[in-house]
Image 1 (cartoon, one colour):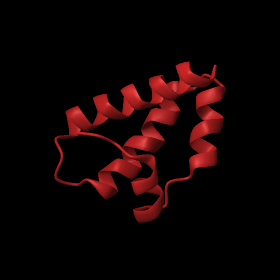
Image 2: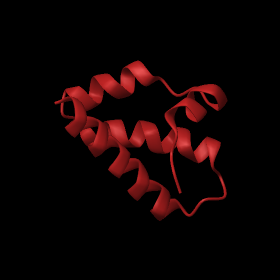
Image 3: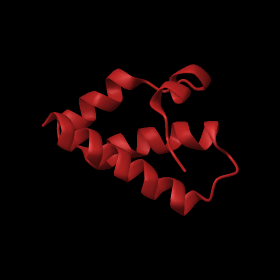
Image 4: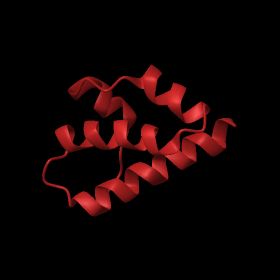
Length: 67
């Protein structure tokens, strides 16, 4: 399971600026929830627990890459 941000931007109302704002402020849980809600719209058949774990991992990856 791979979450591709460009897929979310094309198929949902995911706000990348808000996601990055919360991520760089260190509000990782809030950023993860924004990503998770967009992923629920884009990937409704995925297991919700796995989806949340993947969203959290993606948020942490982005946070560590830029901070």
